[in-house]
Image (cartoon, rainbow, N blue to C red; front, side, top):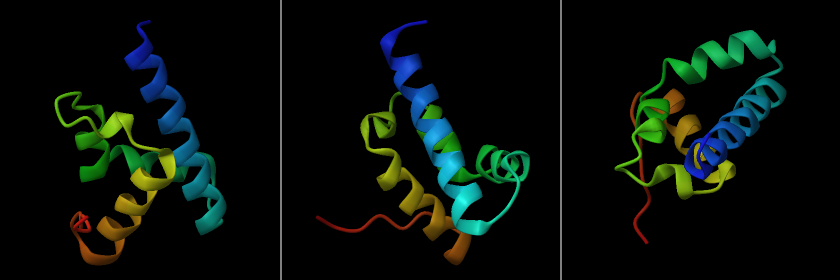
Length: 76
């Protein structure tokens, strides 16, 4: 496993933990929600570079997708 894949795997685990904790749902349900999200698709696409962002940042994008139906990225 290369470092990018390892970084991605750890990030995914952290994000699913956050979803499970914040929404008080089972880990499997949190995993299902995240794996079926647009954010997950962007995260695993190494071309986007999203895997380099913190799990907290990616989780915020996921929350926006759940609340608004799509990813909302704040302007810097």
